Image (cartoon, rainbow, N blue to C red; front, side, top):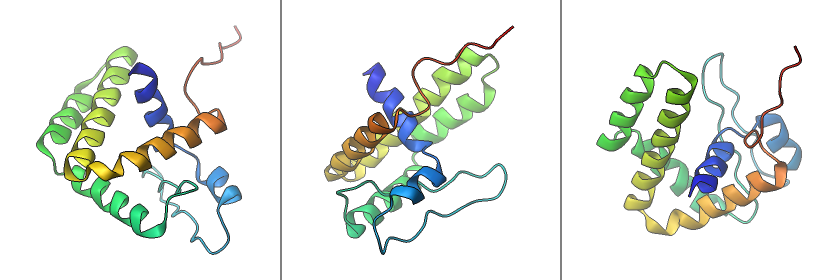
Length: 132
């Protein structure tokens, strides 16, 4: 479960530049946002446009879920790096649960996003140690 959440975190933070390099022909580029705003996720291979739209709509709707709001509020109060890490994980879990509660068929999209994150190496896992 710990690895699943780490992979989900990676998926939700995939860089736009990498996604645009691998996007299939005819797919719209990922939306670039201003400073401090989240970047749009890139659609993974094997997910059709209709399913992706359903997924992104469910992700947006999940933001109004009470469990998600509670997890986000707790995340804002986190002070230490460990608290922030745990709170972020709780937010991701709450969002995924809200999406799957709304439409269980979207589990396949999460699986493909997680598989794509594994293939890219992602941002998770071992962090490089700073040189002192």
